[in-house]
Length: 239
Image 1 (cartoon, rainbow, N blue to C red):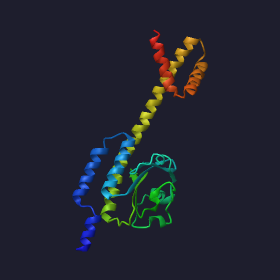
Image 2 (image 1 turned 90 degrees about the horizontal axis):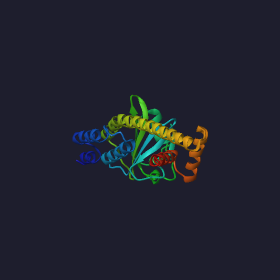
Image 3 (image 1 turned 180 degrees about the horizontal axis):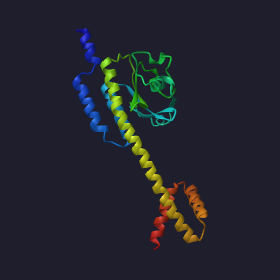
Image 4 (image 1 turned 120 degrees about the vertical axis):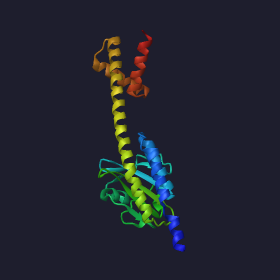
């Protein structure tokens, strides 16, 4: 009877598994906003594992960068970086293998201490690679402040979640890249139009017009796009 209660406490039944997968599909599969996708993944994973902490790292070149956290960490998001194979997280990314540590994770030889994170003192540690089409794209970590035995069912489900969200993250990344390129193109067009206005108004060269735009941007501490937009609007009012 005692063993059964332990399983009920740490395990996940089939109904919960199906509910979790349904929630993943409904909330992130069609969401193309990367930040929302990552935040939602962290909340879903934390909820099913009742975690005290959850970190999500994404691959950027040869580094893993912290992109989402269950506990708000505005100073750390985007700034904490780990090399592949550095720390347990890096090891998981390099080897594409899950690591589950029930207690004293900080004593593991692979553990990487980050002084700004109180989670470094937590006991339980479960780290799963996010793999999409055989390519590693990130790592999800859940931590528990007290010792926690991660059942085979939990680990298997966590790995299933990681596979499911891998595609969503990949789609969100591609969408973000396209949006960035689109924004860059729009900015370029706006700057070109503003340069044309300045060249005509002051009878100056294209190079001098760009220098004038850049100087205004520096003086006003505003982006080139904002300065260009202001020049365009001003020109339209003069017509």
